[in-house]
Length: 510
Image 1 (cartoon, one colour):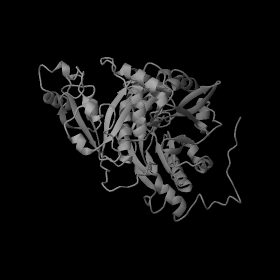
Image 2: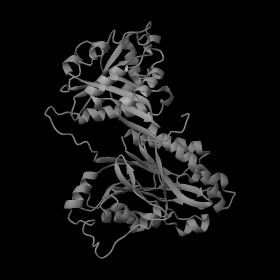
Image 3: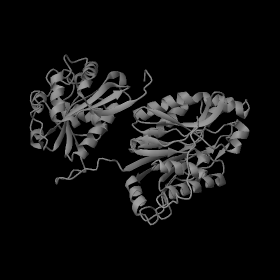
Image 4: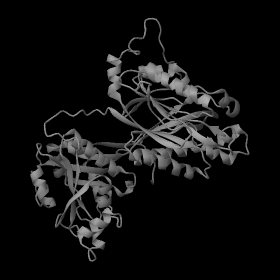
């Protein structure tokens, strides 16, 4: 990525976006003359089907779009070309009572390719298809690399080779990787498409939730998927090696559709090996030089893999003071910092760390969450304040050297889940670091804890990883179950508090 990205936004297209939309289209289709929609066309689309027109903005600038119509299934089944399917640019084919969401355009500005923004547009289309209770998404995709092989093979043979990854097509390969399947080949689809020899591939994605009987769709996401990373401590030659290993895990949990990726506390500690000749306090201050580059790279990962990343924690220098901090890198490109409030005696004695002065809940596209670093979860006041602010999921990145230290984190986390009627997800490091002072052994077992009531596991444990083994733990949590618990639980801990006798409040710091 050439420049720093501060924010990515996916929303519906608006007419004021037209100039930026046009500029991005021109850049996206340099091989095709007049390859942009006229303003009058966009006005028509927004008038007849505004919810079907999507855009991606990076730092306020439109860099991609996906445009759609709703069509009658019988029309899609017929042999057609591009002009016919869009009613010769009148869009008269749009039928709000149709069964098919038909994609008429999708593009990403070339300067922003490689960030999986196209995948994000496709995912939004799928979500729209489900929300509108449509049967499928259909569109005709170009095969721009076919022109290089047209003299050697038929379109059918070309498609088969792309399917089997013997050849790569920038459009078809991407669409196949997004769960679309080939219906048929269309000849003379898009006039002037010399790269594809005017061939196109009609592709389909089926909505498994489609119901022929009309029904209301719950637009609010209630089931949230968590990806917990139980990180193996290992020797790392440099920060790029750390990024490579971290990206592997982000790719894995993102590939399973996780909404969050949680890394452990101080998982970057192997980078301290280069400073082992220094005192422990000096070595960790050298490690703090990596905190800002790590934040920036994890922001890129959050955008590219469309996932919210909790970066565990790392040392951070501010005004000469050393803090233990982490970053919530959201998939919209923004990031926020959280700080460890309570510092262990070991962190004070060996590193001279200080505790932070501010804590808060964080708004995400999956609701309000809280983040507490390790020792902080052993102080119930913090999470109770977060629960009062509406927190549904508490994330706890931790680092414990022995099993008894882990036991404190585990049981306190379970208590926080019960008393605050929320989910608590914890993840730590495993393995040994013989060449890093004060970081030589680790013990961990990533887990997701629940409240204790009939809708949840009887032991309050939703899932657990294998202790002391590098792995991921992918878990679904249902926020609707928390809502029911708050109102109709066997006990209602949050509602039954005696606020007339006692209270917990936050003292705001300057």
